[in-house]
Length: 112
Image (tube, rainbow, N blue to C red; front, side, top):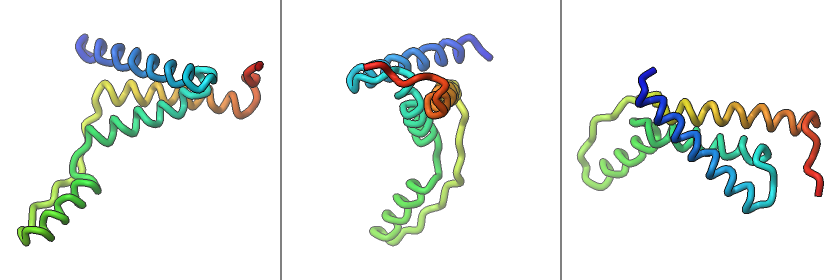
């Protein structure tokens, strides 16, 4: 792994932690209770914006073909795994472990 990718991963992880912290403080819940859900959002958003040729691309091409009558060439679905997606996936998996520990009662509920 290159130094550039490692720096990108560290910065992305810090940003994800900060956003999760602010969401948790806004709703007055613990950080680990929100981590799973924000991890899903980060990983899903990163996947959506770094892929091409998916369902949305086909929808837009179909709409353009219907309006203009010109049939466009279809793009194959491609995805490039980058350092931000890997970081989001790791954040999601850590959040999943904490979420399961909360659901199973291993981590006690928050004291009020």
